[in-house]
Length: 189
Length: 233
View 1: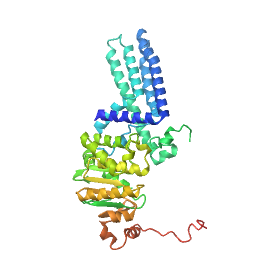
View 2: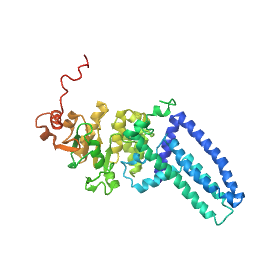
View 3: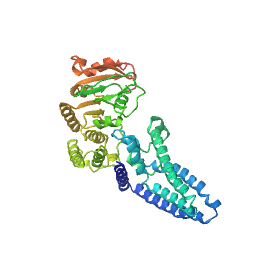
């Protein structure tokens, strides 16, 4: 079931790419930016290992900031295609636990999530010289990625519900219900 | 808003739910099918308590709610394949049924078109196909004929009658009284979140038309003669 949800996400992603050049461009650009960010921040984080412990400790506030930023940024990004909205599965006989597992696994497969996992690993590398701190760094990496991914999913889904409701439509167009032509048009309506 | 509403649908019947806009039809159907948790009360489907185990109840039901959010980034064919897979159907069977459903509902030519590009009627039809693919024992359809062309409408009527003939149960809401009168066995009139009438179509209409009976029950006021004089003046 988990694998099926991941496959479903990729099929929808592929279709979205092939249908709209805007979508494709934004994904390619997003991917390159992500690669750039990881390419600069990752080694920078890992290099903190060479510094005195006091500087290595900078990984803590840095990684915490990335986690928070990720939740906020993904709100902007996934607003475009919230393909993993649990509301789409309501008529299907899936138990909440198995659906949650599938959605979580699918959430890890995106470019931003991959980027975040790489940054989390860079943070682990920074602590490689301190055997005592290494398990804690690993645990922090796991908890950090989970927090960022679950946090952003929760916020996006909550917002999707508000935007889909009658009140929310007054505030702004619901991205999930907007027509395909609306999604690909670049003019501000 | 729905208050102390109680309805029971006999197995093997085609049950129509009618009522004015905002009467609580969609709310009632949503609560009975495990889509909207009620504050109180129970919903039982084929002996299963819907809210005690929603997944088990959803496995025996086919639901096509109004405004259902489908995976609209998929093509019609992909959508049916994924719905069947998510319902754990054997692949061979689901692929064969997909082609049959697409053909019967006149969607075969658009099977590879993305659902987001479908017209309103086509969305209704693919949503119905998605509700039928696992051969449920109960079908719950919200406005199944809305925006559907007459040819497909006839196909859907035939499907529903044949389905009920083989022991299936259908609950459908509609605003078209003539359609309910001609198609359904039983009908319930709901207004203001309450059941005003619940009977066989024959007993309820008693020789008259359902249209007339409906207007009497919900107490429709005539548009007063001197209103809207500027219109067409």
